[in-house]
Structures are given as C-alpha cells and as structure tokens.
Length: 124
Image 1 (cartoon, rainbow, N blue to C red):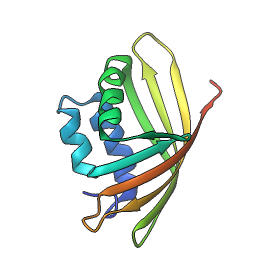
Image 2 (cartoon, rainbow, N blue to C red):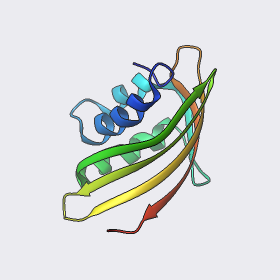
Image 3 (cartoon, helix red, strand yellow):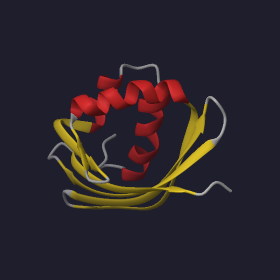
C-alpha cells in the first residue's frame, strides 16, 4: 500500500505504525516515503534523520492515536489532504491537531515531499 494507491489508508496507517508500532521507525518511514523525503511542517524542514529523531520520543509520549480524514485527493503525482490527528497522551489528556497537507509522489507511489500547515484544536 502506497500513498498513491490509497491516500486515506496511508494517512491512518502511517501515524499508527510510526507512533505506536514496535517495528523499527526507519523501516516504517521507508515503506511510505522515498529516501530523499522531506517534510516541511509549519515552515520547518524535516529530512529523514530529523523525522526519525521525532518518531522515537513520540512513541514514549503517545498512548493511542487516531486519524479522522475529512478530505484526501490524489491527482497524478500530486496529493492534498485535510485531516485531524488525535493523540492520547500517556500522562493523560488528548491533543487534536488539524493538518492540511500537500505533497508530491514518486513514480513508485511513495511520498517524496510534503508541506503541512497544522494547528492544535481546543479540547472539547
């Protein structure tokens, strides 16, 4: 399964596998992203190494997570999505992040580059 084949499944599965799974984070990252993948999140560029440095501590903080996809579109090698990432913290509480993502796919269907704008939604 690649982001091109099923963007909604990628948006749901990747955070689950990366944030909560037992599999090596590098293996998970490489399954869905090219080796030169770059994520620009709220203006901050994150290459492969910086993403891996983010995943490992996130696994220690998250007790659970779910993704609520509002929109997901793939058109050729371009994609766009709007979704919520709802994270339950081990120390209690929940953080809901609204994410707007635009990306570029490689020929093999994996994600090559993504730009995201995020905001934390108020707790309900």
